[in-house]
Image (cartoon, rainbow, N blue to C red; front, side, top):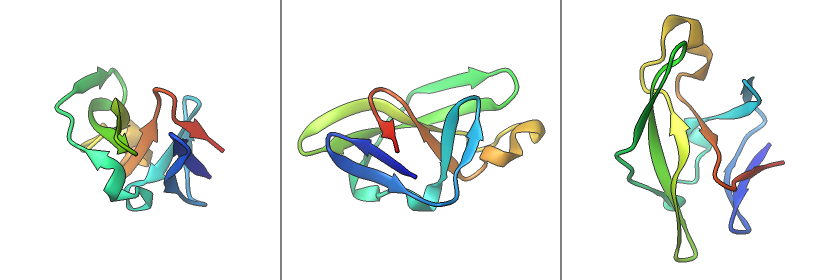
Length: 92
């Protein structure tokens, strides 16, 4: 699977986990040169608190386009050390 934004592969892995229609990639699959800081947080009732990264590709910023659960709840352990994408990031 590949996560693509702005005609650039952001992450690539054969090891994704599908949860609620979202492919969670291993954190190690992220191409760190495209990741920038975000202080955004959100909460999921069953997964816990999500943190975010933004993407910077070819001078374009996609704010909060990557999310992850640094300390997921027990029932969501399958997303630990994984990231998922939205905001125009396509998964192929």
